[in-house]
Length: 408
Ligand SMILES: Nc1ccn([C@@H]2O[C@H](COP(=O)(O)OP(=O)(O)OP(=O)(O)O)[C@@H](O)[C@H]2O)c(=O)n1
Image 1 (cartoon, rainbow, N blue to C red):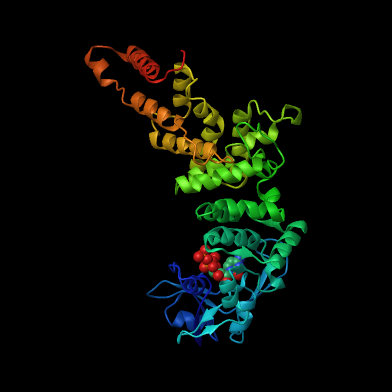
Image 2: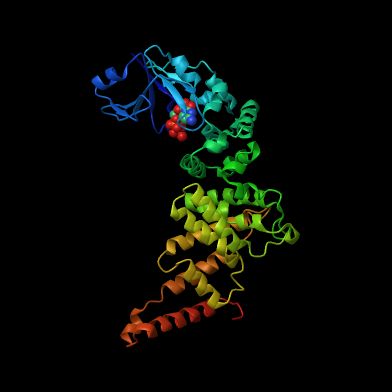
């Protein structure tokens, strides 16, 4: 049997990037031979094994043929006669279809090395269409390698468009969509992922609430870029510069979903979009099975981002209502993440990137001052139960009035 390093490890080594996981392909072995050598089988349908010591993944060379719609509609063949070349041709991108033998020799039948040099993401063969998730994967790789100058080959974009038009993405499992999207949010340029999905028509399938924002105008004074979809892309880009947190990036992405519900006769104003957006965030999160900690920050950001923009005009009672509703008291860190989303929203506008946003510090100071008010001193002064609650409330109002110049 022969063993080759394949996929991401070979690609990232050739790109001079840190190699995360090593995947291997084994040619000319049976599952029984692998088990006899002490490998552990993982997954019952695919012949993938874990190395007894390194726990790295070793897959028997296989061919796959789509026999039905959906994720599981594959027939997988992994006889000892399946060659390395047959295995490589079923892979998604040429840069992912390079193998390396144990002498360090590359086996590169699809010219992946040339595409690495040309910085091109190109599909290997028409078999690309057999896994619709690949549309999302390619967009994610484009986001991940954007700073290296990678783009997608025109013929691959065309194929992705065709797959979307044929309804292939309608079969995707929500969990797989979110997994790819979460990984894309972690890259250096998450906006590229969403822009490409928009370009090939896939965004309409996976996140129609975001897709419909292109073509919806905003007032030019506050949004020189005007278009809401373009603004959202600028905001997620800013969020990725301001924070490593995927929750922050997701919340920034979704902060204006409510604008999709504004009746066109009200454009370019969007009265009430903040609250309206909350239900849309919930819809996206429940449909894609997105964890609650993402949903909750995104809901807060949708509902209250304009409060932070208007920080100097807010009444002290409005501040306190916002602190209660965002549960500042138990989740002060999440509140800071929310402020970062507001900062990203402000900077994510044409020519605003370097403008000051003093609201960020202003609200942070007020929140910290309110958080520092404790029950203990009132207890010591002999106050009880509801009296203490009232005292804390009064004290917080006092502190907000001191710090905020708003006419209260
Ligand atoms: N839908 C998919 C998923 C995976 N692959 C192939 O399987 C390899 C390993 O997949 P995976 O571990 O998901 O991705 P990597 O390329 O290793 O990238 P990452 O660094 O994101 O793990 C890929 O390189 C690619 O050759 C594929 O062709 N089609």
